[in-house]
Length: 112
Image: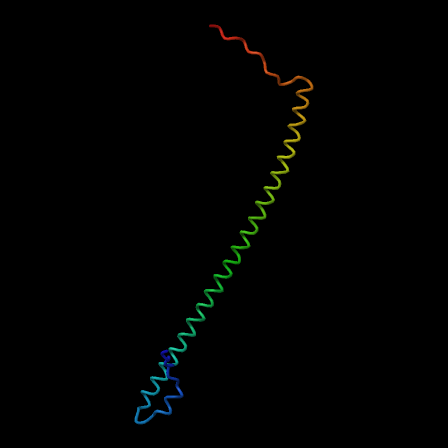
């Protein structure tokens, strides 16, 4: 298994100053700091994006739930209306039969 080489820390540079210029040491420290900070900034940016996406999805879910409730209420109202309509049609059919209304009107025969 390959071992990962950790990025050099700023404190490890102090121990290895054997003839190395201070500019080189500080350049390495600065490079290490910048790379560490850029990773942190990238992570923070991703966190903000994820939070934004989460909030967008939460509001979309809420909108869908509200729309679903509205459709369910409308469907129930339509069912009640259909039941009432069937009841009224049944009463009308009963009255038509009682008074012989709505019978087919005899047609005149067509002349040849």
